[in-house]
Image (cartoon, rainbow, N blue to C red; front, side):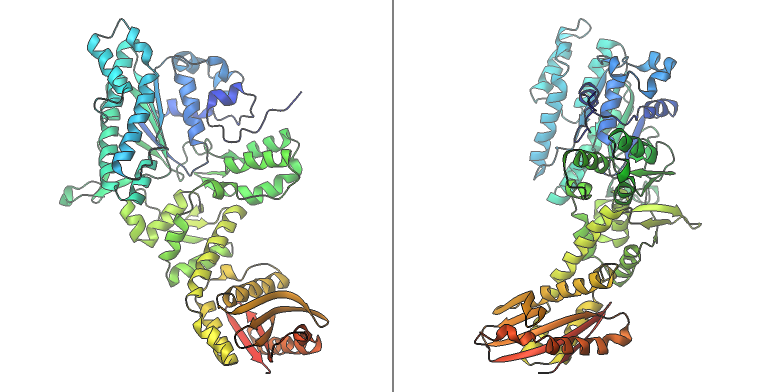
Length: 568
């Protein structure tokens, strides 16, 4: 019997259940949702943690036109009375705002219209309803044609569905914050936040036609500062959900619903076992586990599913950065651009596997995200770049990098930032070589190292650290026009670390790089490097060239210090 396929990219519950895909059973969320009733329920989770699939699951369960066989064998069917009362008994409106990403407000609003047209067309059968009058039918026909009042469109559809079925309507909205994020990036945030606020208010505030609503997103967004003095809500911040009847907000720090987004350790073990991949458990855990939602440790589902598919279909058994390659990483450069000395120290702590203590704000404005480094720490936490490993007595959370995948992302992005920063300040380094001044070369490199962080002291072995500094020096030297750089080239009786040829001045430089175990060993290791150049006869590399002068440099590194020696 063939095995079910890993559901790579499948976010439609019906397609997943009818298409022979492996399903990690999250139907227990339905029971918890109904037992902890909320008129409006907001779930905030990072991207790729199963929000869209759970929204689709809820639609399939409640929808009055559903195929109830989709739930055969799943946990929720054990709740007999609950299924009899709710399963397939309600009209459902489900929409995702993930594609509302216009370059300006007019384009974004047009995309919203396209979305509402699709929703309205799903209920074309209401044209045959004996319970709707002519005006009702004209109104929903207008929506399907892209006409009418966009802000109150969902309210109109709920009213007509309630009238037709004589049952209240369930509203499901996925990725509610994407239009706000895109608007902030493209400069029309105030217009979009005002629109979304009214759209939600019409749809879900005191809507007598609605049974309940479930809304998902990455962030709990506050959209503007208000100026109503001591009467302002949320310390001067007005929420998208202001005025709702006690909306329930469930974030990644809440105990409720903590196991329904993301894969638990048991679920991952079961999945690996199903595909006979048990031997990869520890590697899977190292790379994709480490998140903590409420009191439960979870893996990123997108990673685990793609990893299983890779192991089944490929001979490549090295883990990849699936999540970071599928999500927007524009937060990291923003974060780095605002980094100060304290931030760099905190990044050092994280890079060494330690935690940092941070206050987690329940609500954020986009303006705060761009103006405050503390707010960006919050965003990195809520969007999945960091996770928490506990809470302190003062209410702060201990934040850590969750796993190897995200560590690699931080490592890469921060190195890119560092390289971009140092490349603009390397003229003294080049001038130092022009003057054959070991002192000036050393001072320039040390200045760059002091401005870096310990992410850059990469690797766990002596060879890896030496290789890193070798690469760092190559990156610095390649910024000079007129220089030809060779790395690890055969010369004499060995391989020279770096050979530099100044084609204008017709001179050559041989550079040997060492990593010192201690600061006190920098000088002796730089001298050893010079001796190696002589003993291994690296000058022979230039024997058939027109180079007139050859200079030797021994450079030893230890963390944020270097020592440069020259003999010629």
